[in-house]
Image (cartoon, rainbow, N blue to C red; front, side, top):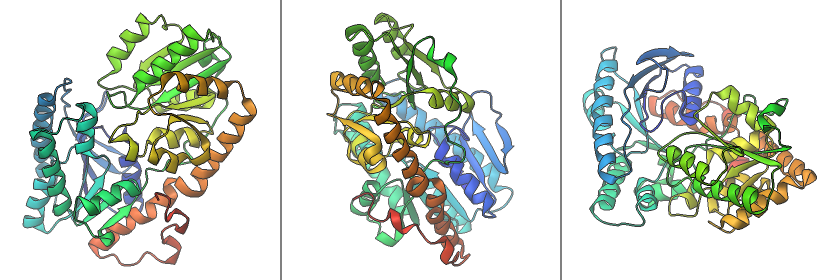
Length: 409
């Protein structure tokens, strides 16, 4: 198997890493081609997965920057795939989006070796463009629709992260229901679980509120920072501090804005941090933030951070988005979309109600263990590959978890 991912390095991309580990554990030989992360080598083997990485190109904020980035990524990826191909043909190529640009490689490998193609559908690139560039529907948007359509048409199978994406694979991609499998990015509850808190992370304050995730224009971290401003500077709550973990195009601007607001002592923005630090923060925090604003992309997207908060037994504050409700159910408080003041009040209300926090955290953890955990999701994922390579049925005990049917409705 060869897995291509462009927007995050592996093993930092948690979904792709879970997929890799499932495939290796099931007897498949896996090579990943991805951008190079900080402190990682261009060639390495991690837990049985061979990783071939190319130097990442960091774009600016303009549409043209993304064209240059994707052109570089395609050429670098093609070179590494050809290098890996010297060791023998691939049975299956999986490409993860964004972007939707790797279908020509899939067609070339199919024509040469009969390689099958799995499209791991992480994001809606046309909606991502509309969300970043304020609804512009010009040539760039039409081009993204074309690339998405070609990716769907090339794919032998599609693995979608939720029912909303699966519906688009059918309506916009022309895939039949038997060609699409919903595979949610469920956390591993054995790895992601609450530990003993680390009081020093509260920085001398009684309460800690946490954010974990990418910091791009569509991720709403600016709204979370605005809520922190309301809580600390307008409501005078000096008993609450914030740690926003992650990096992205907006990180430098968020640091600048935090300092302008006089929140340097209250809000920590450490950038991308090790998994151990993440676990310590989420084990110490009282509330997890999912501030993704309502836009064409976020409303139908599943937020990994929401389920990771739930795995740590944290109650969540989120804007009222369709797929966020599907994931979190009653483990989250839902706020009118994009209303910073209401969001701040919801955070404070949870901080001040430890009994409610504990009950919501318990329900979230239970939901992860019983429905969302990767152990339930990987069955359908592995079945896709088994069917493509002709390994046959995996047995009744590995059937899809019937409790997930209809969760995205």
